[in-house]
Structures are given as structure tokens and as C-alpha cells.
Length: 374
Image (cartoon, rainbow, N blue to C red; front, top):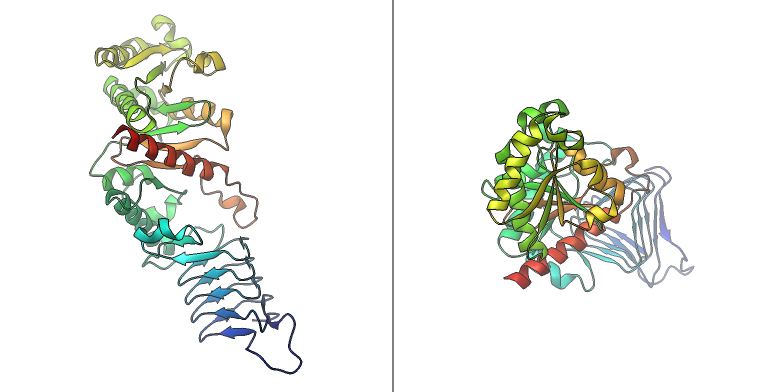
């Protein structure tokens, strides 16, 4: 396309030596891009690869067939992208890096000299910041494939990135969200969401419902089931022998003995009593406004909260960039960043990776703890 420059950075004036840039059939290069090469370090772009506008490909890069490189990507010298790799949105592939297309069983071995990528059958429409129903099939396929790999023992844990739900709903996706779909794939398991950071683990009993609905939907059974799953997974996946649970009240001051609503006495307290009868170290209902200061947090391993914001506000206020969303209650380990898709900053190069890094590290630690307990 217009303004695209292809050629050697230092041409041989005699015209001798190998071609510095080799383009296979059906390669498409966008406007104002640069493809550099040297006779001693030729660049090769495989058949059917598409590069968007403002893509820079450095000398010696080896790009396989049917790759997609979306706007403002730089491929460093001698970097390698194998077949059907997609890169999008102000990414720099460092010199010498190899992105390898592998089968799941080969991924661990490939890490020594490459970033392994497992190919999918579905096609993708890659436009940073624009959710597209064309990507729905690939999103579902990626989740299903990853769960299958974990269940088959080809991976120790599942780490998911945020997904755009509306394009899924628009093509008939039948689940409220990512977590519920994972519960279905796990054979109908009851998933429980926990936000886990360096200083706090917080679990909401009710999640994505209107605040006005919480008193009606909150039940003693829901509290007991949520807390029991939390205690079991803290022991099995975090290596905490006897987890301590602090159960928040629903109302201000945990209801003041019924003066500020009857839910804490009639719904929450019986749940705590049942948990204690089961041998779980639980206490409450506790006033939520005094549960999250440092001395209080030192007395429990997880806070059981009655609604979404009661759990997520303190978790994110304490450690927004380090907090991880952990799904409890599944027969496998699943973590994810605690943020959403961030379409408003897509392609600007300013998104922070901290929460994803934390999710990867936590998944590894959980897998190690689970293996040690086995």
C-alpha cells in the first residue's frame, strides 16, 4: 500500500548476494510500513501474511505463513513468528524472540527459546478497541480448548484474560459470563469468585445483581455454600490447613442487633452458626466498615462479603494492579486479572500488565500447593 518501503538497509551496490527481502505469494503490506533486510540477514514473510498500516519489520525477521500483524507493531531483528500468529496493537517483538506455533504438549519445552502459541481453528477480526461478533467463535473455542487441556493434564492451571461479553451475547451465548461458562465446562460445578491480593482475599456471596435485589436474593444456604467452597479451596489450593473466615454483615454495623434490618440476625448469623457446626473457623456477622484495616485483616484468611462492591471495593483499593480474580469451586485452578477489556485504551500502549503477571504467578503458586497436598 501507499508509502510502504521494502528493501535492504544497506544495499550491495553490485547487486550480488541473496535477496534482502523475500515475500511469498499473497503477502499484503499496509500503508507507511517498513520491511528491512540485509543480504547477510534476509527477511522472509510467508504466504498469506497480512500486515496493517505502520508496521515495521526489521532485518532478519522470519515471519511464517498466514500471520496477521495489526497496526503499529514492530518486529525486531531476527525475531521469528511461526505459522498463523496474530499480533495486534502497539506491540514490539524484541530482537531474537521467536513466537512458535505448538501443540499444547509441546508448550513447556518451547519456553526455553520461544513464546509458544497454540493455534485455533476460528478466524479473528483484529481491530484494537472494537469488539466484534466475528471473534465470538474464537473466544469460545479458546476457552473450551484451554479447559480441555487442563482437564486432560496437559496444563496445571487456567489463566484467562478479559473477554467482551456483548459480542458473545449477540450470537446467542447462553451464559451470564466467563465464570458461569467455566462452571458448565466443569460439569456443572458451582463457581465462587474470590479477589485475592497481597493483603486481602475477598469473596462476594451475591455477584452481578442490582444492589436493590441483594436482600431478597441473599439466603443462608447461599452464604453457607459460598463460605464452605472458599474454605475447602483455601486448604486444597492455597495450602492453608485451617482457613479462618470473617463473614461481613449486610447492613451498617451488621444490623445493630436487628435495629438496622433483620437480615443479619435472620440470614447471616444462622449461616455462620452452620459453618461452625461443620468445623469451619468462621465468625460474624461483622460490621463491614471495620473489617478491612490492617489489624482486622491479620485475623482472617478470607472475607466473606454479602454483595459485589462490599468485596471488590476494598480488594481493588488496597492493590488494584496486583489483585487477581480466582475462581473457586472448580475441579481445576483458574485465575484472571481483576480488570476488564479496557477498550478505551486499546492500541495506545499504556495498559499495565501487572494484574495479568500476578494472575500467572498466583496460578503457579496454587498449582504447586495443590501438588504438595496431593
